[in-house]
Length: 419
Image 1 (cartoon, rainbow, N blue to C red):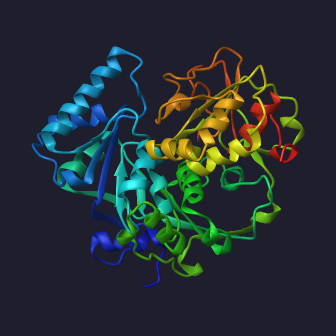
Image 2 (cartoon, one colour):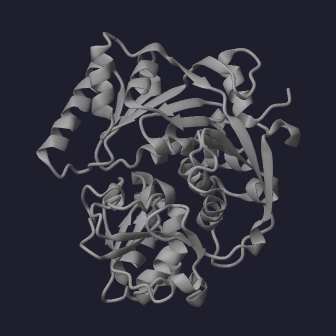
């Protein structure tokens, strides 16, 4: 049937044909909690009188945001989650295993899944052709207890992308360009769906960057079709049997289509303090911005390909003497692969501080909080005031290439200058 990706997947789980605007009850394939919002979900689960998780093998808890714990309060929250997991038979992922969204991608999600998580960037699952969305802790608690949830079927915007990226331009630049185009509320409660030759050729690792940041435009989800690259990724994760082809509908099924040629793009950045304050890094507003810290990691850009991009720029060189380069692999697999391939060795020799897999400095709790008036170039997904622990600091969002170039030069730098 002709339908958007969101309508197709939701319809399968509602067991009927659905259209944008419908309110439906759907079965949930995977439900996930993390350690900052998870304790509230456990509290609500208990207060609502639920006794058992409906499908324990399809529910997961991740200790990633405060890992290792910086305070006794967070350590106690981890105890709450460990106890709940033990009682309910839910799989818990311990400190050092990695970020919720990366681990879901590597180990559990399959095309066509409906996925809910107590974290707004759960939408990253759309890189594998899932209807994946963040929900409040209470909603996820109910989904864990009942194995289903209700939602409104979102309208969809088709982003039809063609062409090839130029040297020094990456998927992060593409999604930043889109966010600058749409604004931070330009896709509120929409399904952002990606099509065209560029989307079809994009590896899942880079699709994840774009699906992850769909929520920064207010989107409900950000979905790629499942195709040969999806199958390749799943085989690499020893999950080839999980592949299911999910194709998009026709152009007329979408609320609107935005078409553009990615070969026209250049490296982009989001300047403080909003994700949609996007400029080309060559813009006058980006010149001579002194950088104090560079953060290479997060669920957005902490994968092996991201670390490799930075390592190629920094190989045989040293990070600027006034810059702290913090590198956080998104998962233990990324960490081990980075060690085996010598990528982490290259980054450490260049002056990087490599941390255990997890969220690291991204949310401003620990492992890289900023001082007053400091500037950080980050490959993460948010640059709101205070996001990295200090409202008197500034965060600039960029690709791994731009981040590495900036670490090298000590000022915000166009990566094409060092490639």
